[in-house]
Each structure stands twice: as structure tokens, then as C-alpha cells.
Length: 400
Image (cartoon, rainbow, N blue to C red; front, top):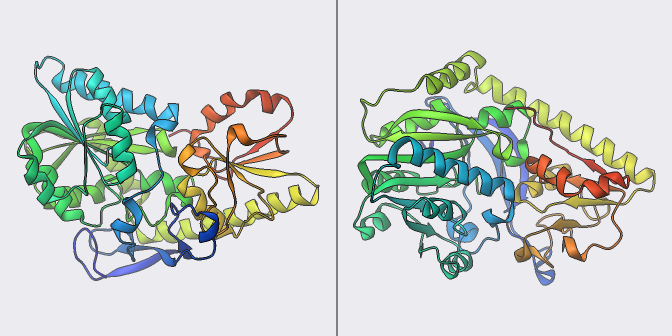
């Protein structure tokens, strides 16, 4: 393949997580064992230095009816509320008429916060059931895969375009980016929110790598993509959500000055060698060490007769479970709050998913796959902690 961003052919293998199922393909009982496997490898472009997967599961397979809901977690909703408030305060609070387009709008959680601030809202969501859920909740949502052709059917421009947790998913990367430029008002702001690869490497959060995430951006690498489409970064902030995410602000105006904050983050990337192949090869070695540590812990708990449940059934948890080779013989079930996953089984390892109100006697150990919501989980389950239930976090990010 050629680089997804710059089309270069010079790509080096950085991390190989083996053959894995599409991690969001939670299974019905009669589907167990039928799920296809795909290579899960990160490669590094020698020219633009973007980290990316070297194989693609078709978007129609992954996104037409997935089961992720952004409104399930209070921490994420709070984050979305703060982003909307910041965007409005900085650029649009005094406008009588203002609008926002959310690409990959999911259940409309982000758009709901913009609506509360007086924006005319529109979402574009590929998953049929989730688009319907959002529409039923009063969030105007177009069920489609956003790209340049879809952008032209809208026949309008927006003061704000938001893409949270979707811009690294894009199979039609250049068509989508060009569609964003076409729909963005001349004085508008494109708000792109993405997992920060620098933080993934720092925290050895390799489970953030799965087939839906085709690209792994740092600021210097996403800047290459944006400039190719005459879009320009002018500010960015590192937020703690998901273990470390960037909220970046983008303009159509190349003369808009870069903020001191953006310049500082770019300088830190350069100083740390965040975009160098050697950094990713060192990361791969750390992933192997993390695997050894986790398997030793789980083996010790089982040898002591402890019952272990998984806390959460996030998509990223399946990367971890499959790479570690941990199945129901070790973790009895995954305890989830998302009703769309009730009664299903994890792809690859086939661990049953239970809703939290279906759990009877609590386990001795919760192995926390939803580690990125650590504070919320520890607060929510303080009573279990007080009763001696252990909460083990396989990945433990520090402060961002």
C-alpha cells in the first residue's frame, strides 16, 4: 500500500499485533467462531512520518451498524460540553445565527451541547440504528458516510464543523477532508478531536490500536494532511479524555497565526522524536513487556482462586484481550452499561457480556478494560472497593 496521507510507498513496520477480528464485532451466540481475522499492523511513513495501519476492513463492515454509544459515559459527555462551550466562547458567542455540522455524530451527545448554546445542528452518522436513535432523541441526523459527494448534497456551509473520534477512522480520507473544506464557512472553525499518538506511546496504550483506527496522528502529521487540502491548524490543546486526546482548531485562512500553545506542542513532539520510527520500535518493545506483566498478574490471581470479571466491554479491550490471549477461562464475563452489547460475546476470545444489573455476587477482581474512565469508575464503584473488590488497570496513564 501507499501512505494514506502523502501517497509515499516507503512504509516500515513499527508494531505487529497479529491477526485479530474487527474489535467492534460483538457476537451473537451462533456467530461464535465465525468472525474473520485481519492483520493488525502499524506502519510508519518515511516521508510524512504518519503512523497508520497497512490493511483496511471496509467501512461498510465496521460502521454501518456498530454498537458504540458516546452518551453512555458521563466523563465523555462532560468533555463534549466543555469543547462546545470553549468554541462558542472564543468565536461565536455574539452571533445571532450559528450552526454546527458533526461528522460521525453517533447518538448526538456532542450536538446536544451545541444545541443548548443556540446552534442550528446537523449530524452525519453512518450507523443506521444509532442515527435512528439520535433522530428519535430530537437530533437531526443524516444517515450516511460523509465524503465530498455528501457534503455537496447539503448545499450549505457551517460556522463549526466537528469531528470527534472519527478523523482517524477514514477510509475515504481525502474525500472527507475536502468535503469538510467545502462545508466550512470562510471564517468558520473545524474542530478535530483525535487520540494523540504521542500519549498512546507514552502510556503504552496499545489497545487504542484497532481496525477502526486507520491513522494515528500527532500534530505534525495531521498538519501534513490538512495542508494538502488547504486547511490550517492554528490552535490545539491536550485534554485527558481517553488517556490523552488533542482538540485541534483548524481554519481555511493560512494567515491565521498559530497559537503559542500549538507551537509548544509541536516543539515538544520534535524534541522527543515523537514522529520517528525509532520511537515506535521502542514502543513495540514496551508493549511486549506490558503483556508479560499483565499475564503474570492474571495467572497469580487465578492460582489464588480469585474470580475475575472484566470492567467494561470497550472496543479497545478486544485488542488487548486478543493480543494477550486472555479468554473466558481467565475472565468470566465483561460487565457493561451499554444495552446494545447485552447478551453478546467479545470477538476473538468469546467472553460473554453482561449488563451491570445482571451481575449477582461481585468478583474478587475487576480487570478494568475501560481504563480511560478510571476516576469515574472508581467513584461509581466505591462501595465495591470498600468491600475489598480489587480494580486492576492494565494500562495506567499518568497526567497528560
